[in-house]
Length: 227
Image (cartoon, rainbow, N blue to C red):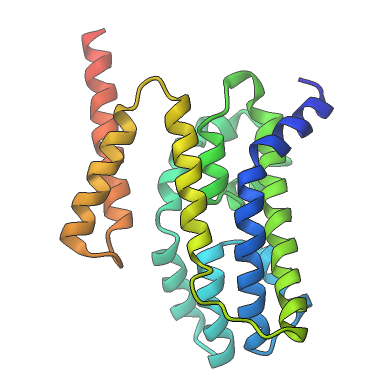
């Protein structure tokens, strides 16, 4: 694919992410503005931290002067799921240009990873980089817009966080329609529901991902043995 084709493909793939990131980015920016921080802070945090859920958690931390140790532990708990994303992308990232590899590793988000899962081998490197970059640009723009709008308009953020849930549902449905083998998706859903029932909504995600990864690995090993 030419660079122009890669850009066009990346824009098309990230359109659902754009819709979600702009809305939720505005919500984050408005939350940040309400805590007394302006557009420069929104730009800095969304560029250097770039972890949506963690950024929302960071706002009271900034206002309250929370210790770095507490921030680090919170970041680990909130973003533990990214460990599983990274493990599944190791081989892809190894093939990439060393100059962009660190950026790809540190900019991997839930939505970006979900787009990666639908990419074919012949379009991975160039398209993956642009998908990652465009997604972050959307988030940064939304964050800055949020701080600017909040300075002049009253904001009621009730329920706006559901935009990300809606985005996940849309992406999941799209991938389900594209997939020929839906067994991995079914396994993930069953594991998520089981862990949600056992551990509750605040602690189910990382164990569910871990259990799903183990079961899918066992399935691959058994297929290899049979082959």
